[in-house]
Image (spheres, rainbow, N blue to C red):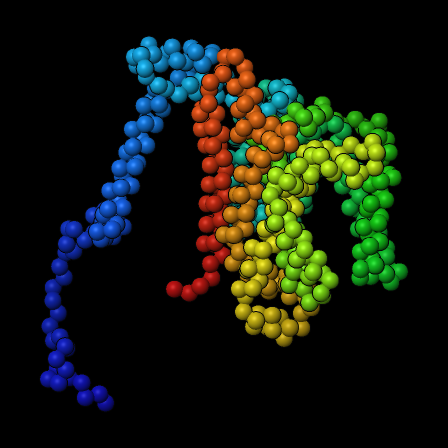
Length: 486
């Protein structure tokens, strides 16, 4: 028994003190200010300096924003209105250029009558990503689907979609939302079909072209199953599947599409890649590169950590070469040099070439991010997978990669954001990005010559909203996957 008692221990209290209210200066906003802004002489000086700099920026920018003109037909009319309202020498933003040319910043030179098509493609993207990004929350999936249905339908209606397209749009979105809410397996299948539907909506032409490409995967799967029945498995069976797919695409896909189009014509007016521009171009390239760079980066990260020297060496060479050259160099290769390595007369779409190079560039950085997550796992995880009798691929799929990807979420999302912002570099290969090429195109007209900052403010705001949304989702994903004990 302990010998501790009040007579021998000087700090034992034998009476309870009544509770006292906290000091007024130690709670709420005052406490936050003392801890974060005025906790010491250095923080006080930095806070005062920061407030002074902020006031200097606001003092310059606020008059320019508060004097903004939204309704004018030219930059000279904007300046005249500002002078009449606020006196000679006053400055003000001429956001009338955004009001007059918003369609070019968003859609580039896409045909005005077809604006509803990229809008629908972007709206359906939320239905395709819902089962993937919000797989654990049915409420969030329903909220995303509801907002996407209403916003997409209203935007398509305002952009001039006809009654028949509007009816098909509403039916498609409601059916897709119902599948996402009730049948998870079917919803993932629709997610895999979305790239083909998106390509058809954006570029138009016959729907049977996309169905013919999709049928190639079915032919490859059938060839793989047939090879497995005759005892051909492993890499040889995989090679047979790839060969069957390539032969279908090379020899039979075009005749199949032409025959089916003659039987049942399902097509949209074709739109050339040279008509793409603005955020339609940036989102198309960004979404495609982000979607394809993640699985390719995972494969490269696993290859770099492989025990096979040849595989590891090839992965290291690819990653270090891609990371060692600027993205603009790869874009010039895509624009100028890639056609020299193709057969004469081959037509290789410029946007497809850019997507390939941006994907390769992003996958090299993605591989290093994921390799960091793999290296952060303790060796015991690999040993536990081996003790359970799992082979390499099952161990990676069930134990190693889920943990590594969770660790790598901040780096993965940072790479995604960087890739999306880097899509503005396509201006150097003759494509009309929303930041520079499209702004220069608008300023080339006599009416808006001199409207310099307004296009940048508008474009930067949209980029910020999209990138900030990706950042917030990554924070939500980190909280959802958090498994530590507090």
